Length: 582
Ligand code: TEU
Figure 1 (cartoon, rainbow, N blue to C red):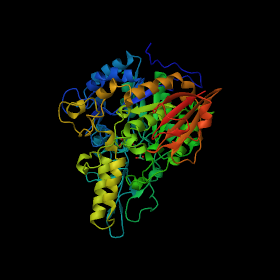
Figure 2 (cartoon, rainbow, N blue to C red):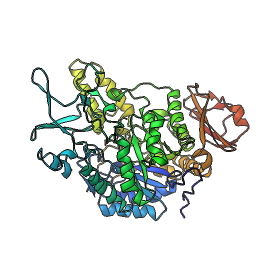
Figure 3 (cartoon, rainbow, N blue to C red):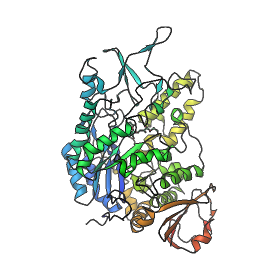
Figure 4 (cartoon, rainbow, N blue to C red):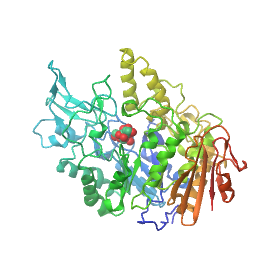
């Protein structure tokens, strides 16, 4: 049995995935085995022993399917084929075996709200209005204004800026895409389309032995198909934020239950982690993740990633945040499962967000390691399934602030930047271009997509070729090789605290959460409790010493771990984190 074997604590349903530590691999940037500048599956296989030594139980592999890569693989042209730069289906089967032989598991990314416009389904659908697959996507006629100018069917603004509709000259209709025009939305109202999705995207890989899926944009498959205009909230623009028009639509739970009953359940305890947007009501979330709902195992609540962001139309305008915002978000999604048959997730980073040290700690040279350890303590002490993103375990940070926009590759951030360039150039919003650039330096998805930093050799040991994206300038200082044998490193600290999380799983994975001293804007203290056991977690989110307001309580408990050993009981050092137990 693997040393990381997941012994289930009897709390509610015994599911293997509740106590797992899941590590997200972004294949393009993880490890390039053949020197073409792109990460690949053989490179992931090569690093499975490293992940196993870290204490990882499950690997979540972001999309590796064939794709034109407009959205880095979230635009899939063939669910049953692997992007040639990443390898082959046989390579994925070898990866599954490499995980399973170590008692680990492998999850894939399930992207079934949309396909690539190069998928054969869309190519058929767009070929003619009477094609059998025409209704596998959303096609609608144009509207016209009083001057006869053609307009899209609705005024909806997409996630990547611009309209959610693109005109098709050949069949003289618009098609819907919430994301890029190269990502047409599948019409889940079509039973034939759903069956094809289930067979090609889900069953094909379950038959290969995958253990579950992270489910992309999980609550957007059922649209409000009346396709009415969104309210005008941005008078400077024709297109308007319209997220409520496509999130949690009328058949959403029906579709997910159908997929569970017909596709997933026959394969046993297949785990599904939904990416759930725009669903602030915990009661509604329980309708997705309650065991009795038989839809999803758990979901990512994206709120933590939104700290510091503007609204949908201003996602990349940075807003200074207060620690109480983080306390509220963490507390909400820690507590909503208590006393229910639901489950929750813990994460601080993923491929869609800036690095947590840069966003919530400090990436200043003197603070980046200590704040990385402080954030590690927060993550390992929280209830739910824990997710770590590649590089988080060594304290990777955002790209240097002086990198120009040319170093940013992500379609979403570049969409916002180009739109801001136009608005600034036209005088509509003279400062928007600079404000968006400032926001991208903190919030851009690119920051999590720089090559993984393995060692101090050229390109951080990621590739012997020229990486598709520039490696961080600090890779000689921040890399796995430099940290693996350093007991004081961020990597060593993560290994230590992941083991403590398993040792004290009753409290850390299953315990009830309660924040204390909520109004304190410098320190975040919370209690985890289960039966007679209790843990007190104290986190200083500032680069200054702060009074430890819970010192009296802590004095009655045993210090389990600190990132600043030897500090005095009543004062938290800069970015100090401590966990006490009793
Ligand atoms: O992201 C979805 C996504 O980020 C938005 O729908 C999110 O809800 C919004 O930005 C508010 O935070 C997934 C993938 O993670 C992302 O990489 C893809 O670009 C996107 O879907 C399209 O597949």
